[in-house]
Length: 303
View 1 (cartoon, helix red, strand yellow):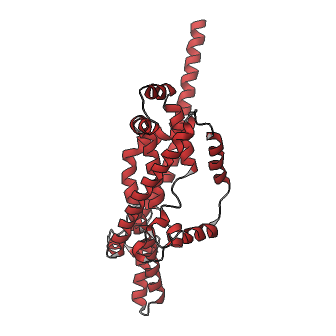
View 2 (cartoon, rainbow, N blue to C red):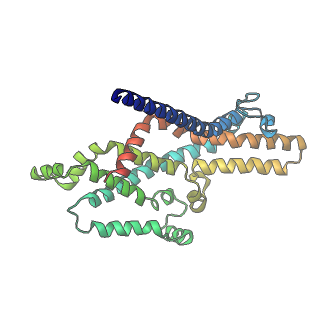
View 3 (cartoon, rainbow, N blue to C red):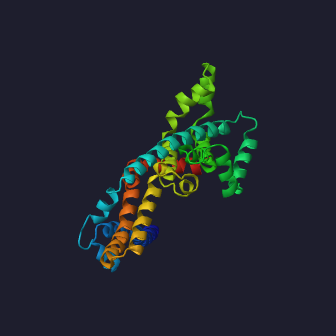
């Protein structure tokens, strides 16, 4: 009897597992479709005939494959300038972000730092209240950063949430015994940070690099406010200017046929510009995904 009951219990558990797996697989498949379809639609539209895009005939696969949208994008000389500007903002800005984030997070993770709770409270307070757009603009102007490259990297030197995540990672990953051993050997705090803490913090550093770099690459509103020289525009602002110019030319075109062509080209440009601006990170993310997941789990849950 006992064996029969155990057998029935196992069959019941096995049946429940199968039902759970089916439901889980179905839900995951639905979410996958919801996520992938817009991406596939954008790529297909960027490769389709402009008339098919305007008429809404693109559903899944490209209709009348053409590269006119990409040719129109890369014919613009300012695209290269905007791309290089975005690389500069991303590279320099991310380096500054990581430098200050680590310098702020490490002392806050040390138990022997007496006033760490006071500093942490001061940091956290900035997450609740902001100075506002106009005071921030006046501050940037008074500092002489207006219409310079530094206006996009200095005001956002670090993020408080990122500091909290990195601090939690240090607290949960770097044992106190390791610090005590290093101090007995005469290791200074900066030497310990450089030679021990940073080499052991690869996953969380990779996560922060991705988050900060993505923010700088997608910067738009700050550039729109602080920059007025076209030569300093990041890629996102350049793409906006190209789209607006094509739309304006289509609206004011005297020749009806030329206006129709520009309307169709403007519709095609929308999708081509999305692909161009998103492609670098779409290619980069698969290579650092494992670091991203590991770093976020360790930095956000433990501690």
